[in-house]
Each structure stands twice: as structure tokens, then as C-alpha cells.
Image 1 (cartoon, rainbow, N blue to C red):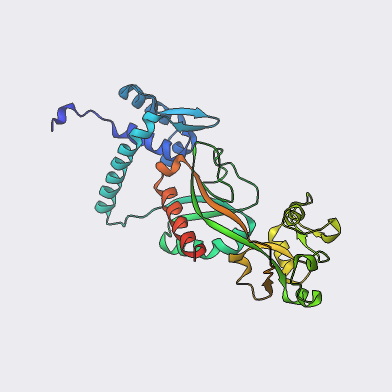
Image 2: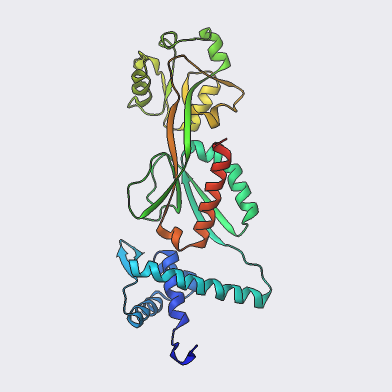
Amino acid sequence: MDWRSVKFDWNRARAFLVTAEEGSLAAAARALDMTQPTLGRQVAALEKELGVELFNRRGRGLELTPNGMNLVEHVRAMGDAANRFSLSATGKSDVVEGNICITSTELLATFVLPPMIQKLRQAEPGIEIEILSTNEENNLNRREADIAIRSVRPSQSELIAKKLCDVKGHLYAATTYLERLGYPRSIAELNSAHFIDVQKSGRLLSLLNSRGFELGTHNFPVVTRNHVVQWELVKLGVAISGMPEVIGDPEPLVERLDIPGFAPIEAGLWIVTHQDLRTSRRVRTVFDFLVSEFSNDLKR
């Protein structure tokens, strides 16, 4: 190898890599403990040296160009090698560290994610987790979260989505409530029952009526926007509502209503992240971990 021809500046490459991983010059400057103008000059100098544009500006953040995406893999390999060199020299183990924000629905965040996060923390103690429990779709492009678990596949081309599984939902009621109803065995016998919706728009009412029910607003005396509150009300015997079977079946206080002619409600579950999956080892680690856990827990 002709070492005289190698004039590559590692500091510039590192500036490029960290900016790609952090998504903005400001965040990368903080990660490297340097000023933003200094970092910006290093990235600009690398672009000039290579003769290619590495980033496009998108709002307050930066997005890799096709050339940048091709080159970042090579620079990451250099960064990993440099990290291994440093760790070997200091006798430290190779760990994944940093913050990850995961957003999911209230139900998943309450009943499904906690044991997964416990295992993740045991496997990767250097990763700090923030969980956003909301039924609203946080915008990954604006970095409101790093990873999202959604029931709808996103349409944005800059997002990476992987289907986790299909989730089945059923109607559930507390045993005490079913006893008061006399254990109804048909849709017709349920038309006088009470149900709980999470939207005043009557989404559950419309869904059930499309499946053969004949319900009105009088069948929905309780409405809450919080799915966890909804489930607690069901367990207390206030009314009936729908719930994913992974949450409903294990609950001893309720029973699944297997009514002839009423098929399960099925929906896909997706895990979504930004294109940082291609550049951030931390994001990739958590993404792959959750894919594996959901595959093991929800596909049984």
C-alpha cells in the first residue's frame, strides 16, 4: 500500500459520522464537545475534499444524501475500528451506550413493553430508555422519538418499517358483568349491554354495528380517551369493550366473548424508525432487540 497517497483526515470523517448519527450539527457538536461552527467547518472541508455533498438540510436537522449514505458505512467501520483500538488499549469492554426514546400506545407501553425493557436493560445497561406512552403518532422525522410501535404502516419514504406481527382483538367483559347479563350467547342478546368507547366519535359503535350489532349511543354510557382507564373499567364490570388478546386473555377478572358470527378484529403491528437505523448502532441494537422480543411474545 502506498501510504504517501493516503491523506485522509480522520477528524473530518469523525465529524461526518457523528453528525450522521446525531442528525444535526448542534447535537453532534454536543456529542463531540466542540463548537458547532468548528464541526460545520470540518464537515464542509470533508465534502470539499471528497467533491460530494454529504447532507441535505431538512428543517432543523440533516439528512444523508445518497452519496453520504454510501460513504457513512465505510466511516462507521473506521469508527468501530478506532473504538475497538481505544477499548483494547484501555482494557474496557465494547458496550453500546446512549439514549433511546420509544413511543407506543398506552396499552402496549403498560402491558407489553415493561418486561421487554427489563430484559433490554439487563442486556445493554449502557442504553438509557425513555418511553412515550401515547396514542398519538409522534413524528420521527422531527426526532420526537427514535423508535415507534404502531398499528399502521407509515407512508413516509424516509422511515424504515418492519411488520412485527398480526394482533387479534376480541370483546371482553368482567365475569361479574357477564353474570348480571346472564351470559349472552348471541349478538342479539348483547344489543342491550353497555360498552366503553375511547372516542366520542363512536368508532367502536360503528365497528360493532358493521359486524351485525344494533347499538346506539345509549349503549355507551362511559367514554374515556385513555385505554388503560378503559381496561380498568372493564375489569370492574362497568361495561364491555374490545382489547388485544395478548392483554385480554391473561387477565383473570375478565372473559373473552366468543360470540357466533363475530370474527376477531385483526390489525398489523409495525416497528418504525428513521433512516438512522442505517447509521446508529444504538438504534439498530434496540430495533433488532424489539423485533426479536415481539416475535417471541406475540407470535405464540
